[in-house]
Length: 298
Image (tube, rainbow, N blue to C red):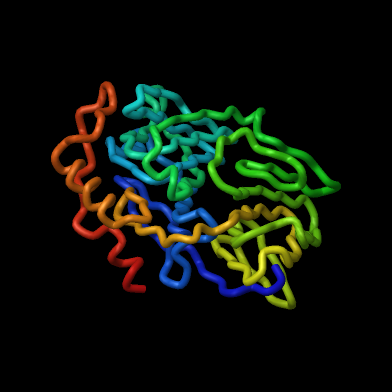
């Protein structure tokens, strides 16, 4: 990726009872375009007694995107949605003024050995939509645009690129692109990307200007429109970014907003039980004292 600004390796973090690799945010870069948070879940081999269990927790001011490579997650939310996400599909939940959801291993897998691997992403909403009515969209895998160019396979998970458009209902100019290489390939995205851009190496390696970067590294560009790099055989990367917002975004736990007072009110509402409940769920995640302290101190 020409004009690389800096390179970081994912950090371990806990969500519920599950260990993930945290890609964003970090001290040097709090957001990339409208993307404010990315977690790499797994890959994890779970025994018959191990399960993903993230009890009901709230969100405001953002859209969440869940994308799995392996395994399954049962999503339940305060809008009444209950749907299992499978590999290649997209769960897109827009929190707006407030939504609550849980994420658990489906019942039929809870007493068997299983795998779980995927990405969980937060996309900030434009200022005028931060308090919009919550909504939820599930896009099946076969509806996501995908195409091949020689030994390269592309998938446009969200946003618009190359004259193609994902059916995921985004609210700002952005892109989330998957590229897989079967053989060593040079990739040129010059004048294809826009705004700010990051590249995450899921597997394999990427080379640029005599430097090689391995899996679990994230590369941030200085100028997205000059993006060029070389992929080794059997490499998978995710390129994400878009136009940044004019206003700063503040993050506290699962709350994102351009207004600190809105976050303070959300904290109070969660503690006082004023969010809508998830049907069928009785547990909940308590408000943590300072969830991003470690990230802020790096």
